[in-house]
Amino acid sequence: MAEMKNNYSTLMHRFSKSSYKEENVKIKKAVFPVAGLGTRFLPATKAMPKEMLPVVDKPIIQYAVEEALASGIEQIIFVTGSGKTALENHFDCQYELEDTLRNRGKIDLLKTIESLVPKSGTIIYTRQSEPLGLGHAIWCARDIVGDEPFAVLLADDLIQSEVPVLYQMMMEFDRLRASMVATIEVPMEDTNKYGILDAEEAYNGTVRIRSMVEKPAPENAPSNLAAIGRYIFTPRIFDLLGRQEQGAGNEIQVTDSMVELLKEQPIFGYKFKGTRFDCGDKVGFQMANIAFSLEHPEIKDKLTEYLKKIIS
Image (cartoon, rainbow, N blue to C red):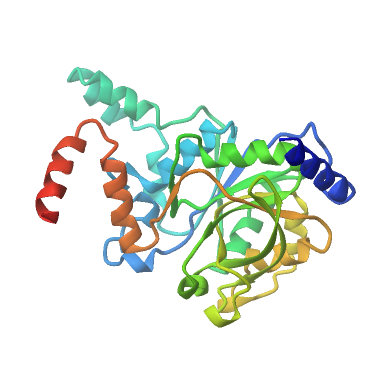
């Protein structure tokens, strides 16, 4: 324990001049880039946003919003595109439905529906007018976020955990006062699907990032440590994203701006506690449905029985 404390003290001294030092500033805002077309799930997403695909009985986006609110986030910022009205309606009042449930005495369902609608001002929508990449989507929220640290959540990355992953990261941010990203280890053959980190161990499982590469071929990847869809940024990232420089896929990549940010401020990779499911992938989406179903009190027993039957 003494060695861990000494390592942490050394780390803080090393980066105290370059990290975001307004220690009283809490993370209150979270950006949700939800403008994507969801082409990997066509035809299901032809008329429905991919974020509205259900895992058990809740759309993917609701899990991410619940994670943010449970972590203490006060303002949800959706960066949307065309065809996202179903998502907006999901987090709004539906008086006819609520009245029907009330008249039929379905009070538990009514409470569930009402709980989806945060108090006024909690959710704000802004548009990404062109599909120019994740970095551009985050940049579109700059005027709403302002000059303060903020979180970014990608709903496709659904994480099953006892403690919300964003909360885990926010606690680490309070100690380090620096940008960070959630990380996982991936098979080397899959490095071309992720932003891959060149990093060194820093403190208690947290790594200090030296550099990042967006979707490198396995033979060019610096490691198999990948960034996934939970970020915390200092506001300086907006200036770098504002350069509108195109990277991999001719899109404005947040990874490229993070590499530039590393020249001025440290960035850390956080190895979270939990299981991540890639719900932007058909296999990952089905795995998430099974995992969350096995935790659902109404269906887990019958599902377990069925899974045992088909496996045997």
